[in-house]
Image (cartoon, rainbow, N blue to C red; front, top):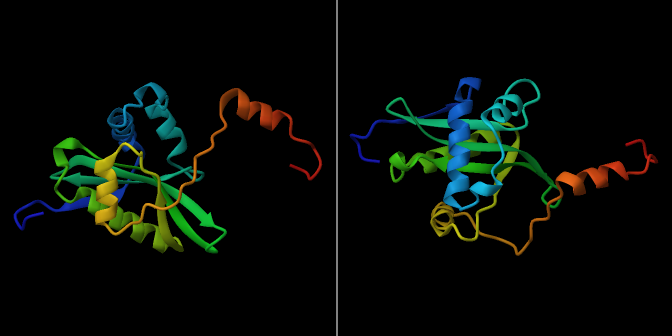
Length: 171
């Protein structure tokens, strides 16, 4: 960012940001050619991202008063490290604002937020095909670690697992 560039403002999202958050999430799905898997709605963001039992936190970046990007994350705990951290589910910068330091600032502000909540690390997943994002995270000094594979249960499988749970143990 040059000395004449306007400052990047980063703030916690408010419910009025739900439409912009949704547009950003849709933009990520388009970027990785996975729009056919994207089923979230702006109402889902409003319902689950705000209030006392919010499932996630979103920081919104603005430049010149315009929506520039988001970091959407939630708390995690590493049993191996014995520490709290933050899992960045989505980091997005609108194309019009890329290359202006918005993603860097969102990462710094997310780390500061997580640390204030008692966290000691950030973790995220990056699409194997998204080489630009991988380069960005490496430039920040982050390591791309592990060969873990994501496992996912949803829909009928999730319901079958839940429905067939035994009653012993009280859960």
